[in-house]
Length: 79
Image (cartoon, rainbow, N blue to C red):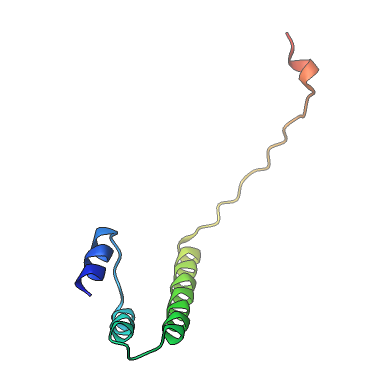
């Protein structure tokens, strides 16, 4: 368990309390690999949803003027 914590610290990652409890339960054999994988998938989805919501709240719409660019053939660039 100490190795996992040091590895996470090295990567600058932090486990939430419920994630740490889940990891400990798997480490001690209290839950199966399948249960562990299902729960970690749920955690990952909830983190992604929270991240996307936060990102959406922080984004600001800035209208841009449309720019018309005249397309030219390569022949027009020879000078």
